[in-house]
Image 1 (cartoon, helix red, strand yellow):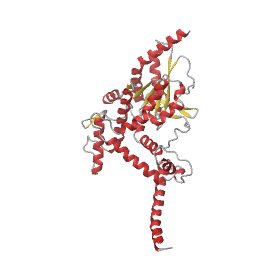
Image 2 (spheres, helix red, strand yellow):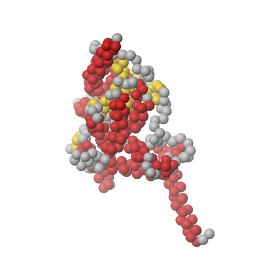
Image 3 (cartoon, rainbow, N blue to C red):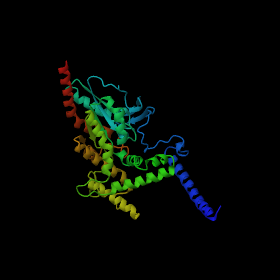
Image 4 (cartoon, rainbow, N blue to C red):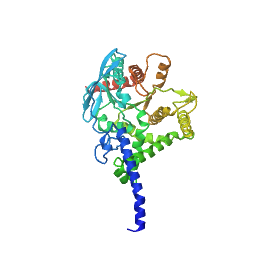
Length: 400
């Protein structure tokens, strides 16, 4: 062995040790972050569930029924689920085939549609069904059936697969989309991972991603840095923000799928426990949201706080991003001529007038919040549904 070979070996040994230690540290990190799944420690062996897995939604097993105290009802009520094929559905069982005389509405979204912190009776889906049926009881022979298609963590990518694989086969007369929060982080990484997998180095990415946890950490860290830039860059007047392309790529295919199948969809802006304005900024428009995020990131770069009592902190990043997704999805719907329902003013008015709390956390609502949301949506949909049901009844009469 020559002196050159020895130098190379002694140079490589510390590098390999550092790589081994970094890989070990990343495996432990992912193991702890993902409910101690052993697959993260022994990769590439074992099972690893991960939000950037691009194989679509796996079999969704139902949890056991849960009990929740309802302050609206004054008693403990049940939250139940049932399995239909590979999907778990919240609420009471329904038939795959739509019964005669039923106007079927399919709700899609994440945990704020499932209403994971309240019983069946206190979900806004069930409350919506009751309110719509009360409004129709004297005018037609049809009844409204609302199917709860929400599940924890679902974003636009998951919802698209849900509709294609199961949702459209249920023959819904109307789809109600309610989700923005779950797009703020993991959905962007999923989107970027898809672009990498389809790129020129896709074969290498597929070989290393989730097999080398060091590579997985580095590539995802880069995507989160890009995510920050996507939200941070303020658009020039009349132009669209960089994050709009990501939102369009995930959300627009859902609208196109509905239109191809002749299934109408309504977009309901997702309500969160966050003010509509702060520090002189309008937090429902793109300009105000971009400025709010800009102040936060500039403050973080200086190593200080984001300002005084009324200013923004790092905890405001997620709600500001959620509002930005809401805004962009609403604009896409209006562009494609899909109805948009905005419950934000009703919640702002109810919050400012006192009364019971409408939220259990940033995203999830109490039974009172769900009741208000159901009222807003019911009022916005009543006339549309009555017209459709009248047309269906006339068609049935002509056929007879």
